[in-house]
Image 1 (tube, rainbow, N blue to C red):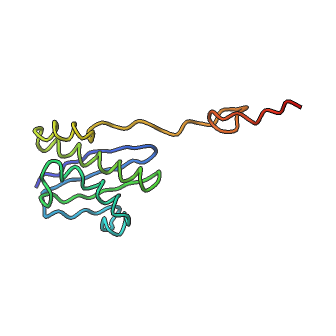
Image 2: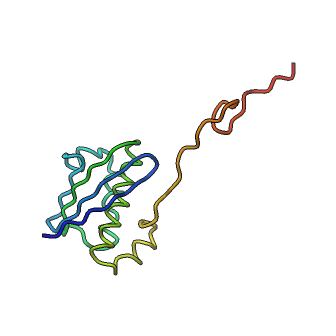
Image 3: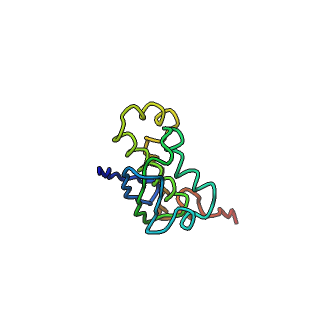
Length: 128
């Protein structure tokens, strides 16, 4: 039995994804996907790579994810699964690439700068 190991990242979330042949079980941090990602939207995000590559129900997935929020974690898992599917079958890459699933979204929160209220927002100017 071949286990494919990949990493997905998004914002400050890191997902270590292990994909193996099976019947479609997805475990996230030792919990079922429906327990971990309560929102249907996040569950759909995670399963999106399987739907596009038409491999639903043919692989078991185990994920260790940490950092960030729920949305960032779901997108990190999605990237990890997409990378694993490309490793398993390189013919999946064009369809996954077309949907933007194999590209790492590198947008992060910009740090707060000194002398500013936020990253770019300045303090309110008072004329008098």
